Length: 473
Image (cartoon, rainbow, N blue to C red; front, side, top):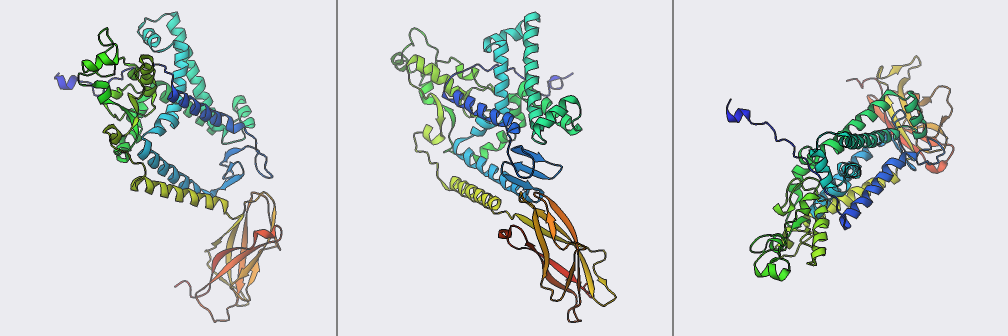
């Protein structure tokens, strides 16, 4: 067998044992993690009083095709708002990345948040970096078995609670959790919980940095959004390397004066910045695709610099221009363009949500048959009226016609239409009209809904077309 044939098709994973660190960025990350977890895990249990609908603050009711978000109720026909929300998220990502790099990955990404928690569990059970390395290298015994088993059981517990919490957003949480554990919940609840339990456990517990390095597409196209003004986590090469490179602290290289006399940089090559990195890179090698801009290496380096009394900032947030001693610009055509589009999209979405109609009317022509000639010579067209009451009160309305003088409207035995709160109603309407042979083909007109209660809503109109003989051609 040739050497090339015997080579592995992929590189084996090198285990990474991130070390704990204290500092302002680590505290910021803990704060964001606490807020994110509090919102995610507690929100399904928050009650919200409504005149109509469930009393859960956030609930995605697929069966009734409604999403409840506090006082906002999103109906099926309003899902174009989701498109607007996704557009805003994309523009925000581009805008922030152009200014501050991958801060989303380092502070807000679900993978980062859950991996941080899993690392905390691992650290609490198995110890910090050195203890975990020693434990993995040691032979299997009772101590190793208990610690490993406890770690994975806690990981699975967090993964299960993550999956179950997601499921609780899709039904009444207090009722669903009881049904879940007594075996009467829908199959979809068990399937969703099991799937998210497995993916959370694998991604945050086993794959970890491989998700960021190999699976996340953002790491691949981020360079398109970077430029010389983008602020990234960077190592000050000139200060850290000097003329003779970095060097550990020795008796002859203990003070800044001694190091400068011999041309040695301020980096003492302690490796702390590498040890705290969750993706295992050395930031001193420059910007790398694996860097998620978590800034833990800044905390690590600042800790060492503070102990030495040499001043912080050897590793810091900076831009390529600042590193060269030039002035960095944030507001330039690219960022201004992203910002303006972002503001416009957000304003359009807010306007659309705040100005949604309390009642919606849609008309569908019954096309089989398109029209019927009655015995008295009149032409009859049939329509399906779909009325959606988006208010939290029942509405009484009357259907009227506009644009067909002398036409007769027949809605069966319904003299008026009653639609319950947050409910929809489908009404079959027949329109009979004698055009007196003055009109052939088709004629446009309107259906009008006139509220009898809550008259401040005003009249709601929907266009329709009346077809007559000769319109088939």
